Length: 475
Image (cartoon, rainbow, N blue to C red; front, side, top):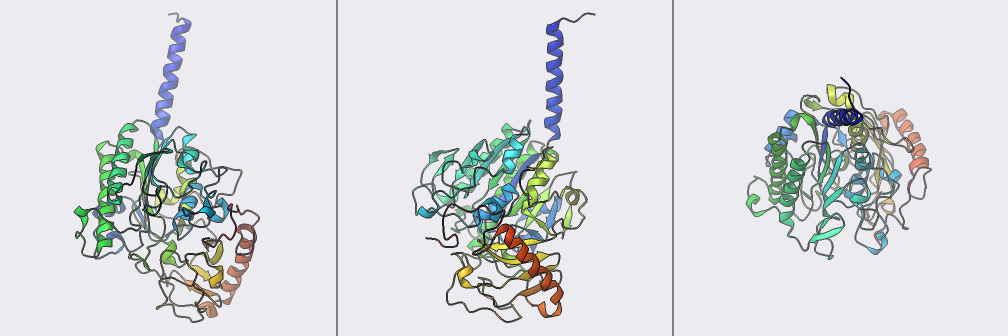
C-alpha cells in the first residue's frame, strides 16, 4: 500500500502531537501556597492548641511535614526573592523589604535574575502568580517580567496609605480599586481554581502568595469567633479554609496524583506586633533566631513522595532546583544557585541535609551561621541592623541564657553565642565555652562568606548591590 506525501505528513504530525501529549502528561503540575507571617506554632499539625487547621493537617498527613525547613530571610521581600530564584537575597540583589518610598523607586527583582517561573515557562508550563508580589513596583520587575504569563493580585501588602496598595492588578493593569481586604483571599482562591480547571490537561505552575496572616488582622466576618484563640486564630482558620477549597478542587479534577503541592510560610510570626506563635522556637519575624527563619512547610505528591514527618535541615531555596528537575528542566549554569536538589529526600523521606553551611542575614548584616546541629550567632550592634530592628538604646547581650530575651531577638550582641539545635531548638542556652573548636570553625566560615556575599561595610565578590545607598536605612 502506497502512501502519498500528505498522508505521511499527517501521520508524522499525529505522532508528534501524541509524543508531546505524553511528555506533557509526565510533567507534574506545581502549586506553591505561600502564607505570610505564619509561625511555626500556628497550625494544629505543628502543635497549636487554640487553632484548628483541618485542611492543612490533611495535607500534612498525606504529604511530608518538615520540622527543620528554613527560609532565607525573616522578612517578606527577601524571602520571596530567594524562593523564586534559589539564591540568597545578598546574591540576587533583594536583601531588604521593599516599601512604597522614593528611595526604592528603582528597587525590584533584577531583570537578570532567573526565577522558577522563567525555567518552567521555557519547558512547556503555563505559569500564573496570584496574590502578593512585593518584589518591585517598577517596570521590568513585575511578575510578567519574571516568567509568569499572567499575574492577579496586589503589588505589595494591602494598605490604604497609598493609592496603589489596595488595588488589584491583572498583569500590569488595575482591574479593581480600593478593594476591601477581607475579599482578597476568596477572590484569589476562585481565580486559582479557575486556572486549575482551564489547565487541567497541560502542566501548570501556580504561585499563590496569600496575604494571610500578615496585618491587618482582619478575617472575614464568617470566621470571626471560630477559633478558641484570638482574632489572629480566626485569621489562621480562614487561611486553612481556603487552602482546603483549593485542594478539594484538585481532587475534583482528579489531579492529586499529578500535582506537587508545596505549602510554607515566608517567615516567622510578627509576635511583637500582631500575634502568632513560633511554638518552641525563640524570636520571630525580623530576627535571625529560629523563630524568624524556621517555618511550617509541607510538600505532597500523591504516590510519588514519602509521607510522614521529616527532620532534615532544608531550605526554601531548594525548591527551584528540585521542582525544575522534576519538570525535566535544568537549573541555570551561569550563576550560583544556593538551593540543592532534594528529590531523593522527598521520595524516600530520608537523607541528610545537602547544606554544609547556611547563613542568616538581617538585611545586609550577617548575624548567624549554621553547620548541621550547630548555630553560631555573631557579634553585632544596633547600627548594623536594618531599619525594622534598630534600637539605639539597646545594650549588648552578654549573658548565657536567652529564656527571657525580647521578641525582637538579639539586636546587639557582644560576643559569639553557640547553640546545639538538636538539643536546644529554642536557642536558650549558650554553650560556646564548651565547644571552642566549633566556634572557631564557624567564625572562619563567616569571614569567608562575607568576602563572597558581603556584610555591613563589605561588598562581596558575588553580591548584587541594590540601586540605592544606605541599604539598612528606610530613608
